[in-house]
Image 1: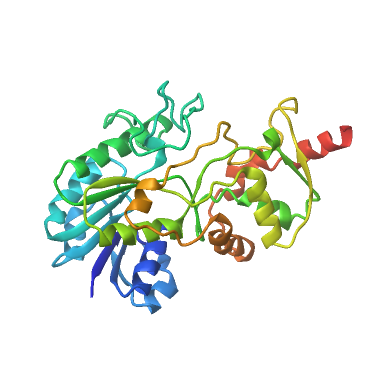
Image 2: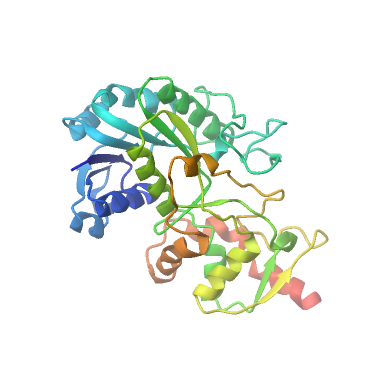
Length: 337
């Protein structure tokens, strides 16, 4: 039986990966700080939880034990994190590091967290230039996140170990800490009869289902090598299509008001408001043999069902989306039409 160790295994991507590998017959060890976050279904399927902090290499080494066929690192944000991992990889068949599309820059050097939005010339390939690697800035800042990810990628890729770096886009799935779909789900829950969408709902920010990321992790594990791969859903729906997917799944209908550039600023905001849109090229993953678990509409349903059923949304959840849920401003605009 193949053995996998998932660092950050109780998070969104980690849980999806554990479920996928367990279903395929793997032995899976989930590494996390809080055992209460271990999903019951993963434990019942045979997943083993080990308490350890990402910053405790000794604890990670003990959890790894005699080695593993696969290590999946969902918590590698800096070069220091990557260097902590290196001594553990001699007894590991292959490693997958979760990076981000945030590393990419356009011709002007802008990235997705820049003050100026990037403009990419078509779907982004893995050969697209990236931010310069940096270790002197906090990875939790807008300018530091992508730069630190690049530094971590390079440490692992230059190590000589068979490491696959995955660069997902806008990750979605059950248990997400900040699911963009909430801006539409809450409107359904509040029985809003009208939906306003900025710029005609044409914005695109390529979604990446956690289940599709898990499928590519499994493919990478079956094809050892050193590489960088984009990871996104097979389709890249715009905001209008996403809103319709949510409404249809939840059995709700609303009037759509597709705002143009002359509409008041701040109306119709949503998490996919990027024009030109951002799309990832998935050709390289396809050549490796990757087959997605499903398209956006298929894979997002579990998250939607979770959002309408859970009574334990993350702290500050509504606050994060407040600018996109300004009902008073919407009602005033509609009354003045």
